Length: 73
Image (tube, rainbow, N blue to C red):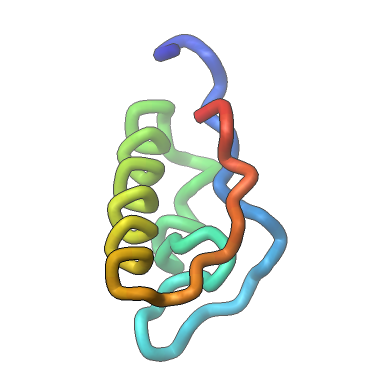
């Protein structure tokens, strides 16, 4: 739904993995986290797409992935 608000991917597990530079909870980069509040909805949806790709890659690699409450994206 393009006109609905885009929810934050934050799940309150806020730790940056030094190996990847990604938050262990939401899989965003520091730049994505810092910019979230200024991103327009298209940019936020692009971040969600990137997160989904990162999550899929981790699952395929057998890496633990935190549960997401991002339903409704």
